[in-house]
Each structure stands twice: as C-alpha cells, then as structure tokens.
Image (cartoon, rainbow over all chains, first blue to last red; front, side):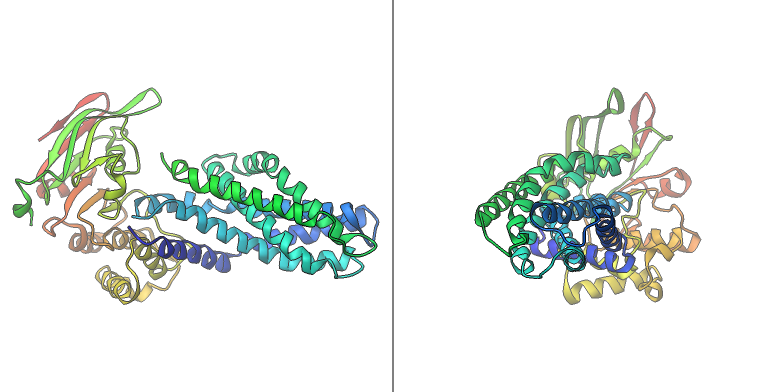
Length: 226
Length: 222
C-alpha cells in the first residue's frame, strides 16, 4: 500500500495545480461573493450592518459562494477518469476524501481572504470583529468542506449535479449556519465586540465538524464502489 | 517467464462469472483459466461484455455471481491486495487535461508509491520509449488522440504491473505508435495480458488463448 500521506499530497497537489492553472472555481466564488455584497448594500439601502443582520448577510453569501466550488470539486475526477485511476491505485480510498476536504478548505480560506475584508469595508464600522471571526470562519470551513465533499462526491455522477448539490447540501448545513451566525452575531454588535455564548457556539461548530469528518471518512470508500 | 510460471496457480481463474446491469446480463456463466505470462485475446461484437470483463478483472466492477481469482486474489474480497499489480488501459486515458504529460505521470507514480529519483528516472525512460520526452511538459489537452494513447500506455506500465488489461490498446495509434506500444505492452515481456480487440488479424497471432463473447450466446474459449 502507498503511504496515505504520499497519496494525500499527490491528490491535493494535483487539485491545487489544476486550479491555479485554470482558475475554474476560485474567481467565480470570489466574484459571486463581491457581487452579492454590492446587491445587499443597495438592496437593503444600508451603509452599515450589525448583529444578526450582518452575520446573516456574511454567512448566506459565503455559503452560496462555497456551493459554486463544491459543485466543481469532483468534475475532473468524473470527466477525466480520476475516479478509476484512484480506484486502481493501492491506496486507502478515504485519502481522496481527506485531500478533497483539504482542497476545499484552502479554496474557502482564499475566498474569505478576499470577501471578508470587502464585507468589512461595505458594512462594518470597525474591524474589531475580524480577529475573533477568524476562529468562526475556520471551524465553519471545516464543516462546510466535509459535508460539501461528501455531497459533491455523490452528486457528481448525476446529470443534475448543479441542482443536486444545493438541494441536498443546504438542508444539511442548516445547523452549521445557525451556529456560525450565532457565533458571529455578538462580534458585530453596534456597541462593540462581545463574547456572549461565543464558546458554546464554537463547540457546536466543532461537534458538527467532527460528525461530518468522521461520517465522510467512514462512508467514502463505499461511495466509490460501482 | 511464461514457461517458469506455467503449472503454478493460474493468473486468472473465472468460474461461472456473471454480471448483470439491472435486468440485462452482460456476462453469463463465464469460466476460464489463463496461465501466468499468457496472452488472452477477447473478441466479440459491441455490447458482448468485453469491457465489463476487463473492469471486473481490474477491480473496478463487482461481479454479480461466480468466482473470480486474479493473481491469486479472490475478487471482490481481496481487491485491495491486487491493486497496484494491474496495469489498466481502458477507453479513457485516465489523464488530467490541465496537467502536463510529466505531471500526470508523476501523479500516478505517487499514487503507486513511486517517488523521488526513482519516479523521475522511470518517467523519463517511458517518455523516451514513446517518443514524447520533448512534449512532456505540455498540457495533455494540447495532445492529439494518438499522443494521449501513448501517454496512457506509459501510465499503464509505470508501476511495472504483473497483469495488463488492455481495451483496444491500438486505438488512435498510427503504425509507428503501434510498434512503440508493442515494446511496452506487447507479448513476450513477462506480463500476463488480457487484450480486448476488434482487430483479430493483428492480435490473434500473439494469443495463447482466445475468448469469444457474443450477445445472448455462451462464451467460447479456445
């Protein structure tokens, strides 16, 4: 058997190299997020947002932008025979799941590096919320990437892939979005950053991450069977 | 090598193999034994189950019934032991369009646990053999179908497999390409080979065993 870390590095490196070369996912995700912020700014006719409204605008935008990347996560494997290549190799097939989750987390972090500062400029009066927000973003990214990779691997064999991913994924990430917005809300209050039940919601995010990471790792081998 | 291995356990042993898709049987009650080092040529019209047979032997499809043993491994239970000992050349080249030829081969080498200088040496040796070393840094979407097939042959033998499963290995290859392919996946190189073909004139002379599959007819082994 090939060591899992060698296979993990090969698959992750291949994905990142292909994305850097073709820019098929990241620019679309970033453009969607920025355009959404512009629409919210003029649609709500507000130059600043706070509390639950700010958290809702941020997370709804990041979630829908993430769906664009999740939709394309396994397209190369499906259309260029990568699934067969990986199934023929002497590797633990769950490595494909972990490598895809890692790739998606990197895409999400790159998206947030672009989108969150723009959100702050458009809607926040101060940048004080941003440092603690990084923790919320990271925990939510892990959960979103785990659930998204699982759903994407199932949907990629369907011709209705673009429809299936949002239809199946969005209900699954409702708990994640509740926890992420609830953790973000006190960071963006008008009176300044507070940490009311911040730790509790971080633990909920961590629990969601754990459940979907373990679930994906456990069932991914079966999903790759014919 | 073929002579040394004959008399030992067959490389491929099928007993009553059956595979159905929904209600349609693609393979029905197929039995055969192929000795290690031999070439089995599979003939038959479209839809006779040739590719299905190859994908079952490659561990990519599960048999619906019957017994399948490949290189001593019972499928599908011991498929994990078999992967890495098979070279599979199917209809799809299993190459990423946005990676170069060398990058594709490096990727497959890593999946098979071949890294570092050993991988680089093997990749250069193969690219040289298929006369693609000067184009190896170009992305494969810029390659012609024949060049992609040559690169797919490199991918197929990169990890020095014991068993080659070849589905129309000459497709898209010109005369020079076919001769090049023979040096890597031809008979007499020590591999056990299963060759699916629509070109019996070319492949029958190199066959130790011939399997004829037909739609709704029993398979014939000769």
